Amino acid sequence: MSSLLVENPGMLTTVQDLGRPGFGALGVSPSGAADPVALQLGNLLVGNAPNTAALEMTLVGGRYFFSEGGVIALAGADFGATLNGQPLEMWIPHAVRPGGTLEIGLTRAGARCYLCIAGGIQVEQFLGSASTHLLSGLGGFAGRALRKGDVLQFAAPEHMIRRRRISTWVLQSLQPRKCLRVTRGPQVEWFSESATRDFFAGTFRVSEDSDRLGLRLEGPSLALESPREMISEGVSLGAVQVTPSGQPIILFVEQQTAGGYPKIANVIGADLFRVGQLRPREEITFAQISLGEARALWIEQQRLLNSGEELFA
Amino acid sequence: MEFRAASDQAILVYLGEEIGLESHQRVFQLLRLLQEEPLAWVRNLQPAYCSLLVTFDPCALDHHEVEDTLRRYEARAEKMTLPPPRVVEIPVCYGDEFGPDVEEVAAAHNISPSRVIELHLSRSYRAYFLGFAPGFAYLGDLAPEIATPRLTTPRKKVAAGSVGIAGTQTAVYPFSTPGGWRLIGRTPLAMFRKDSEPMGLIAVGDEVRFRAITREEFDKWPPQ
Image (cartoon, rainbow over all chains, first blue to last red):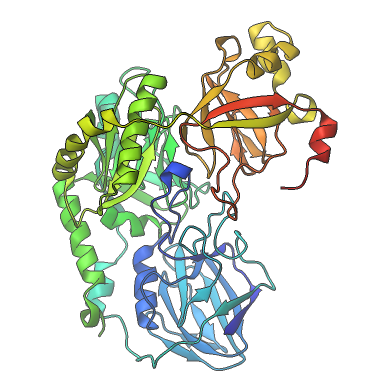
């Protein structure tokens, strides 16, 4: 085992993998990486299985000390990183010598950067996943965000790691989009005609009060056709629910599993990783597509992530 | 059985139109059937009062195919015999610092605070489903005399074990989380423990009863 000392945890750094789907009946939400695409690519770069646990950093990176060294890759948003003072390139594996210090700065674009380590971060699994669920304090490293002085263990890589980068065309297909594609929400008909028009024509600003549970949006107020009480029901990842204030919230990875607010739309699966890269104060719009189109885009994204050698330059 | 797409990877199955044991039974039957005979493409099942949210793998099939398959389960689900509900008893220390909203609930209904507690203890509740946080069970139905809407501004922090009421429902907060339910007491029990089997004290379909304990009993409760 090798270790990683947290000298500075940044703003909100947690251990994440692809989450724990399948425990809704216990009230447990899947959690997992906010940008699962970056996590998977970062893991592939260091020779890990795509679902291996890594560190998810939010807006600010932090400083990490590798007493025994290791092999790392940074994926997702570029926060500007240095290794022992030398600039470090994203999307390519790097060897860290024993005693190396990795310093990751402030976001330049995007909200989340992943530090993937060959061998993977070792934490106790909760319901089959290493993901941290902050609300309940379960999973990950002690069920919480990392603090200064924490020491994390990671397994030594089992084989040689090839130094190769993710190809430009793959990275281009992951470019941020300020227009999120959505499908119709289960209560879309409850909204007034002008609300649906405003939802698709309007611009919404991501509120400062956004986190892994949900992204609160500020924009045109979305009213129901007539006041109506809703019976709470299961909510899906990426649901755009509208509270009585008329402002929408995109339910995100640590969402509560059921809720009683009407949902006007749902972000498509293939755009969820882009939600994970939205920063407070960013402006977004919504475009509606069909379920069939959304499904085709998801299948295409999964095919890309599973295309093996083709991902690399 | 009615279907509505929730997302490109999830479908809502509606099995009733009002909160009550009848809808609950149909949801629970379908949930049990799908848990006992798992379908490879099902990613998650989220029951609620009148619906089951089925999340699926869109690489395997589309909404129409999910709907067709679930329709074939309908008749069999209706024939599922459910086990008699498990009875779970929860000790609660009511009022004072653990129940900061008892007085307000009492005032809203023009009854005494002790009557609020009496009415909360007067019946057993069905665990309709779990949601919000791990182990958070929606229990119903409250005596109509104490049914009270949730707080207009939720508290930023509610202590673990807090017993709250909202509308015609009651629940115990398993973790210290934000929350908008009106708090009337607290249990010393741990509602969700990752190292126990089962992890949650309350499961879907359980019958839950509350029992009043004194502050002294609460303080002496063995650590969970």
